[in-house]
Image (cartoon, rainbow, N blue to C red; front, side, top):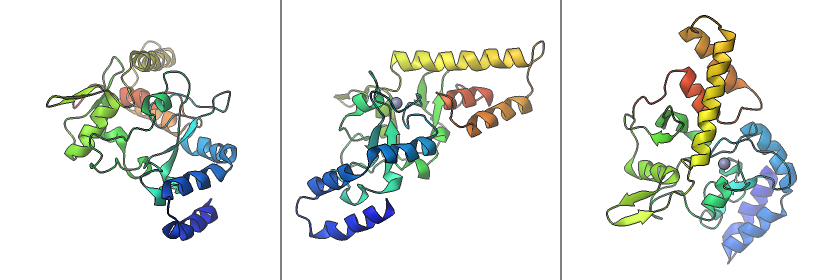
Length: 231
Ligand SMILES: [Zn+2]
């Protein structure tokens, strides 16, 4: 992959139609092999919604965080590639070719490897995601995240949520993940309340598990008693 990228970057400056060149070089990669490595990196959950992803009839889409058609130099950059879910109502269908920002001129959201999204996003006890108001974020970043989650309005301009991560199906799935964490804790500590430390231990074991359970972030937020804080 690194060699393919080096060769690609060496040829890129002289190429006229950079998007077509990027697309064709990207398509020449062995996607099956690439996904194999990427499943392990993402520990089998979608980069956006945290649903479980797996190889099957409709394998996960290899997503360019910075779009291939805009950031030609990042077309084969490992850090720029992520797997997103493809089944019905999935992130891939929702996002399509849209950029994850309000205005095309806004900066791109940072790569998940470079930014702790879990620290700026919160969850309600019903399983909805929100952008925390008690954290420092540039206004462009905040707008982009809001728009990823929900339908938005800015002045008289209305836009549909790009990833629709508060779609009722996803919200219900997160609520179910929360319920299963709650009943697990009740079973384990029958007759008494788990201590702060015991909850933190469980959160850590979830964060370290491989594969990750679907909707791991909402489970961890609940275990750390972070649900609905900082709204
Ligand atoms: Zn997804």
